[in-house]
Length: 639
Image 1 (cartoon, helix red, strand yellow):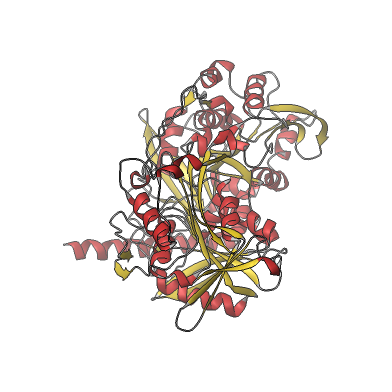
Image 2 (cartoon, rainbow, N blue to C red):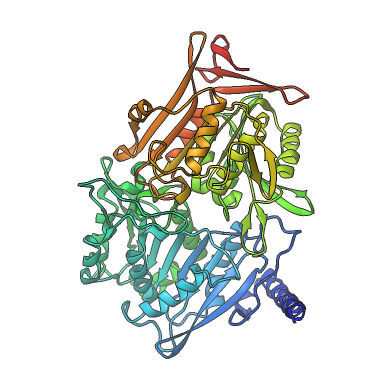
């Protein structure tokens, strides 16, 4: 019976694929407006395809229906061909009277999705048109819960969203944004009336507490700590031709949220701009600085119909997308880790997305060679957290910016598509690394003595396990939120189901973790609980000839926004050089997910080390206080 169901699912998936082909064929003829969406209600989930390195298996035009307050409502989904797993999506609320497929074609949204290999999730009015913002919240929540939720087995999303609302569809979407600001990167509303102050008032006092989401644990804040209010979440906002008689309350709220001051100039595209204050103390821009803004474009015109049409032109749609995609952000649940930053521009920066076959699976990887990289450049190899592709991780860490600022080559691996065809997890990593290492050495001008490892969560588990079993792979490691498995005993280490003996050889090592991190990382190295954090530290202190003492606890260096980081460093003396060989940072305001400000901290640790490896995997390690910019300060630290 199980075999029968599997065969049936495959047949249904094949039929769905044939339908998608016909939709995409229509699109090529520029008559997408006639496309008929495929219903996802009751449709089978897609099956894993080993030949796809990192792509959503279902692409094309879809529909999902919901019963809301006794009425059947619909939402449309458009997924561009070649859209990756966990693609960026723009959520669009179409205006009353619009035929969705025609609207997406005529406004250029469909073309832009194709060009950028992204997705669109489209909210639609009910049979009688859009209702009031409060009357529409049940529909918006039902649609967004499907789009975001675990019940969606058809496509996966980045996790943060761009919002665009047209006409009467704007206020319901804006209301959702105000209630869920950590999930929104930026928002644009065209011809909107906005929302009343009576709706916004609740968010001036509503606070983000320390509640985390699995796999993290809740954060307990220090006494007297001031919690962030919802109304203090910066969220770039642009109103195009708003209703002047009703928009003032919305403008007041988002100007407050973005800590804005009125700019003296008028932008030719955005109109009147209010920029985030230079001295802004908003948490969400503590890393990037005051980059947010609120803009209002109100071009005068006597013919309101012609004026409205102008805002639906493809040129205006591109302006909207350019405004939104200047930004990205990460951490959609825990406010104290949520940050707004500039988004990477793949084409402008020259990211290379490549693939190779590893154990009969196509695997993707991202390479970034910044213009600042010189000949024989160092390489940072990055292993993302579980379910995070290379494309997700390049934006959720800003490793590209640190590479650009410091002149190293960045290589981010993409995980293997797992049994769920729309997500990834680590697999065949040892073989992948060995193949990828040779490809990078052959194709790029790199310095193999300055290979460094980093990773987050499952990627940190993996890279830290490599540090135990294969320290010859790299010169130093710096990772976040993942020690070798909790049963690591210092003798053997498990890497994806295979046990390897611990090498008992030193490697410079650094890890950052959070107050609300995994249960296996809770506490400090000096508390009464022994967990993976303690076993990891005990092993690497030991191979460096060091031991934990009670005196060490009081030697933390405090740094970062709101003094969030406590860093402990263990050093050894080599001649006249005092060398940090082991380091741990605890972030008292972080859950499990990494935050942007940690990325340059990781690089700052590893950049001082190099290693030479002979054919028998014997390693000689060196330290340079200058990061190898001064030949005379290189000292041997191992053996």
